[in-house]
Length: 362
Image 1 (tube, one colour):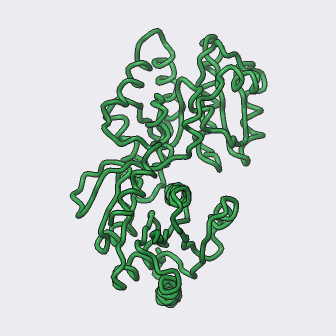
Image 2 (tube, helix red, strand yellow):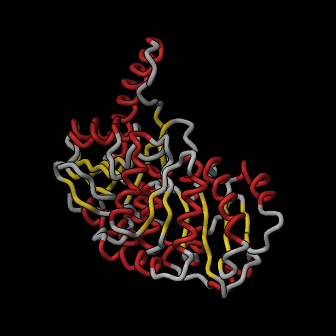
Image 3 (cartoon, rainbow, N blue to C red):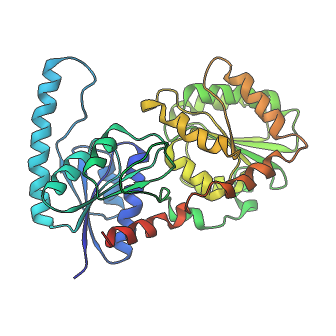
């Protein structure tokens, strides 16, 4: 009989997309998989698109305020979620339960553990999230996307799964000409996540505007996010070697076409950079929980695959300095690309397959 697996996933992309990759790999291998997501989580729409089954539970994260009513509401939803999760487990009868981070993992991992079901946790970041710190105490297997400076029971470094589209080698000429750019020029890709990033967008636009006229052998692709598209496009109105996009469904083709990128340092983005071996200027989101994006970025910066730049009042100036250095006549980009070989992090493209293999053997 084929094994059955429950995955608790959702919330931010860094928690959801590794779970999605595992779910698709389970299905590819002919295994039964069911997702548990929070009620009204947008992740449900993505699961519908990929025709993956899911069940919703009514749960919320631990309140940050001291308002007693919010804590009472949390306790009510906490016990309700345990009841709902127990019912799903009894109906689905999984052989193993997996959490991919975020508070939605806790009801599944906690309940499955006390029902005698094998449990596993995956954390994509270099600094563990609170939910995974707690879930790890009940996990038979703790999988890490990045190395962490902490000893964890039953831990193994697996990398973070990425989309299979990254394995497809793009037609560089077609990609760049489709954006009105020159395939013979070197390209810098700028993006700040699906929603964009106000400070990063503005500083990059200022730096590029200063640089574009001097570095005629370089061109730029700037993905702004829908909200900031009109404003940033105006900043580039007089420049010919810049393509401005609100969003791209083919970021994998752009990352494999670019020579250098400026981006945030979320765990999924880092896994994609590692696979593409793409030199990067990393600007961590300064308000990320426990400053985890800084610690993610530091791993690549310490290995000299990337440059780490803080988002502060000197961001434009510091970006200009990095642009000037990395687009000059030196071997820095070649060295940064080569440095990825020293990371010793498993291949993100095969991570889903390897993780599923481990889960089948729990």
